Length: 457
Image (cartoon, rainbow, N blue to C red; front, top):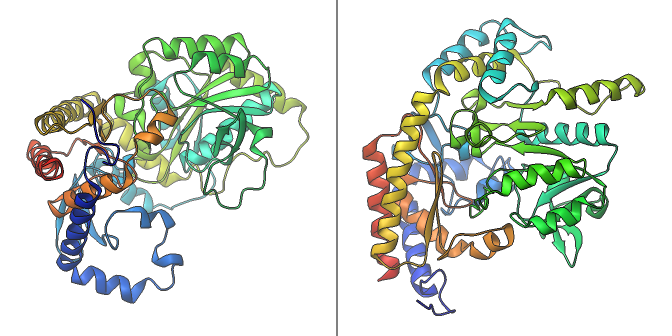
């Protein structure tokens, strides 16, 4: 089947704009309290929002949340939404899981931070090893920090300057990862703010699934580590080719580079993340977002071999600040939340529920796409589902960038919100939580079916 190149994802641009404008008007008319509150209370914030990316939602103004519970969000106008964004994975196990909320409340009465470990901390260390593997663990507040600290350790123990990233990757706000390959050189990504360091000196970028390009970069001998998601996310999702991870591991070992696996999004794969489910063997492991049930926390661990090498490095370095650690990281509130989450929430039973629901959602979206002849497809990684407005699966970050259809996706997102369904704003990601019901999944499928029919009519 061929498609008119003037179309956007198989849809006429004027139809996309008509639907976008209609949905924006419907959203605004339904939320007079939200609009009034935002107009009265946002002047103190830069661009009217506490974080600039809050402007990336497709609505004409942000949803102002009153409360959230399970897999539902309620705004100040009293409108309830089935939440499939779930804090872009931060609340992957639902909003305020009861064991986590109880643990936070109990610890809050005993103190919020004091730069010392607690009995919960000792329990968390054992739980992390049991669930994710026998790494030597450290605690941070965000996955961005955990990735930064892992990069420092990798450079320290290898004595090499560069970190290898995959084109289009996402590892939080890590400066070294904000590059792209242009004419064989690593340069900063378009739109990057305040960049000073020459990324050519710190980073190298190759395409995901390109083993020849990976080996050529590693063979130069200046790469300290490869920092990789096992599946590319926070974009149009890209799955690894069969055998890719085995080859990636073999090549890093061949050329003396460490392998850091960032599971911040792919923890949706199952208990222990993609690493445990598919038997990966990284040197270092990073996980943020949902590890404490939605409270800001992250973990990063290193193998016994890397820990031994790092200990030897520490013996030789001068005394002084290592650049690893922040004052509020590893606080007792984090440990209380992590202990409750890892014990009672992040369980095989909950993952089974999540996976079954995600499979139902995947099938429903795929059926709608096929029924209306949309040149799109669906990808799933455990509890994480994404529709992509491109006809065929993607193999790398550059293809993912080309497949992204912002105008079309924003129109779909806006229409879904007005039909009671919230999905991630930056891409087309949907998560199933332990609290997500079949009725919610079926409502999302029905809403997607309706808007797809209208777009493809």
